[in-house]
Length: 207
Image (cartoon, rainbow, N blue to C red):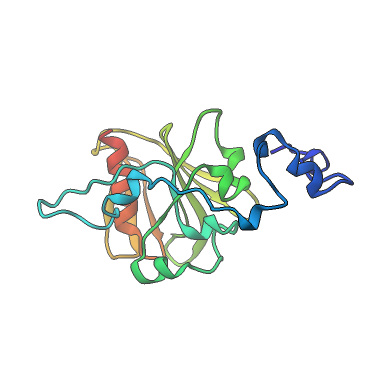
């Protein structure tokens, strides 16, 4: 994760040989790697629960927002990467290990110890125009939208745990409004996650 690419493991003249000697890979038998039995993966408990869009018979959702984002971000693009088959069929979102795992561009908007709970490339709608922005929700909590081309914060939506001061109104699967006492911001999520955004914000308010 060194900011200087030339100092990263494997970037020097030795290439992969230097990377393989890193302490993280201690004990790995590289010569016989293909003949070895791969380790079994431990299922993620969070993946066993229902997705954010699904509710149980009582109308409640078991969703817990921990490092999530759309799969477009997971493909290091943030707004134009191809969808995965599972996303295309269900409109679900991909759980991420950390912000560094999908796009370091958004790291500059975080403070130490702060992590992204949800992120999407959306359109900010105005009366006759629209603007592509990256909408970011963090665990601080913080809710901002960023110009993805200039990488500057275009707006900071004042956070409140009080639904009278901050609430989300869903008008269609792809359209939602974030309402505060001073302004109402309209957004369009082309991947139809308006309800997911509403649940993400409300869950954080009720944490």
